[in-house]
Amino acid sequence: MNYYLFFLGLILLLITASDLINTSLSGRGAGFISKRLSKSIWSTLLIINKKTGRKKILELGGAVILVSILINWLLLIWISASLLFISNPDSLMNVETNTPTTVVNKIFYTGYTLSTLGLGDMEPEGNFWELLTAILSFTGLILISIAITYLIPVVSAEITKRKISVYINTLGSTVEEILLNYWNGKDFKDLEQPFISLVDSIILHAQNHKAYSVLHFFHSSDRKEAFVLNLTNLDETLTVLLYNISEEQRPAKNIIIRLRKAISSYLITLPATFITPGKDTPPILILTALENKGIKIITGETVDLKYEKLRTRRRLLLSLIKDDGWKWSDLNSGGYNHEINMSDTY
Image (cartoon, rainbow, N blue to C red; front, side):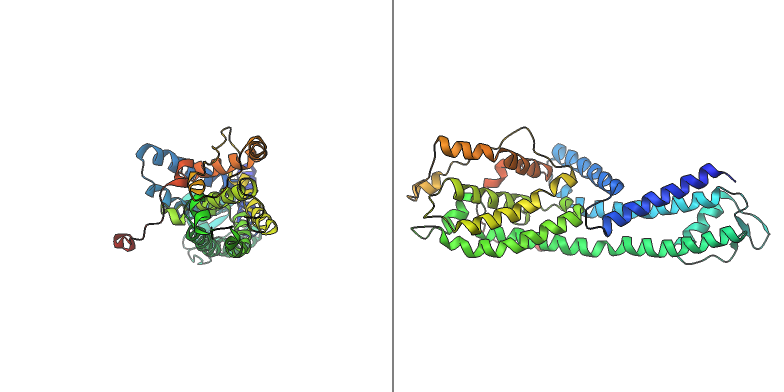
């Protein structure tokens, strides 16, 4: 018996099971293998997108990564189980000829065992291999079931994410548009209700993102569904309200802070997808459209210092935008288009 192959298969099986369970059941995001596999595929797609200029390639990212994780688990389980039987030439016997099986036969046998289908022309030789066959059969049933059912909550969470994004976009597609839409001639108090509605939704997405970090890799080239753009615009709107608008004109501060904390609960999950603040700080918004409406904008050294304290937060938002295949300038790209392109529905 080759103990090196046996323990290699056993260790690989334990590592794969650990990665699968941590990714799908722990609620703490992807496991070691899945996390790095996801990021590698996404980085490749970003390079292709940058060279071709076609954002549609990124829309495949989430599905490709999700399927790749599933296939990776299945292959690793199969390989590790095969190594266990391959380690001993006499682990399996051919029932018809009563002779030891080949390496290919053992790989074939473990595939059938893990899928719980069974295979009648081969059988384990000895109590140990019979017991191992039973264990692998149960293990395969459990692990493969968990792997497949992992797809359902991820897709559901992605739909929730897009719903939040569209809702934010209905408030306005840029910071100035959001503020102008809710300026009633004297203040921005009308923003209080939509802000309250968003708190629970964003907290829910933050928890979904923490549990299923693969959500980050679901990209939409449709701007109204582009979560990172709309969330950044929302966060920048809160910054403007806190630092550039007088207290009597902005929504209640406790509502703004609640929404800010909800967004923060999402931002702190980003390092799990290898997103950290970069070196570049995005520019401070020039609020010309608001000034043209007669809205007094507070500026000066005090405001600049407040923005400086937000440097890390705004750099993280910039990194998030870049990692989703967008640019900071895309935050201000056009308003709402009332036309409906029917070709997009087919």
